Length: 182
Image 1 (cartoon, rainbow, N blue to C red):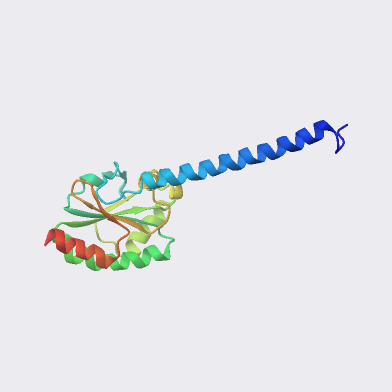
Image 2: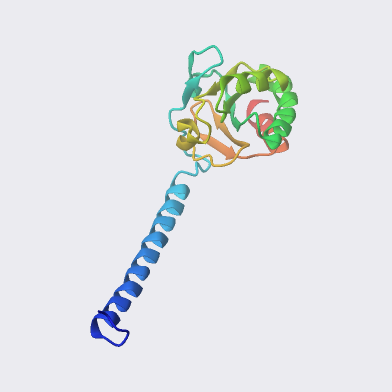
């Protein structure tokens, strides 16, 4: 029997405290490692995007780097995200104004079902041709490859897939288009 005053009881209490510190330290290390990993894959300007490919609504495979455009906006969105819907509206004018100059939008859906995804493309009049998804929602390999944790998210990239900027406003995107394509 272990009484509160016994040597074994005190040793177990000390061990309990020590294990608690170790577990807390291990958790802190994991959080720090996660933060460092996020920072190392934040795709700062000048960095290259990884291979990003997914299925189109017609079940064809599309590689983002093969989309022929001098400037590409890789736009992560979801049918259930009102903020995504609002941002899509702001992209219509950009696409209609600058597509002929070499600007293209590649929309990457973080949806779970094809019906929701395809219906949202129609409902939002997303008339640009490049849409992909892996229909894994937040388990998306595409989102993970680009370190996307919230939608909407976007990356403006050049023809070679080098990042120009991340999460630009429509005004900032237009400034980049004008300075690089006009």
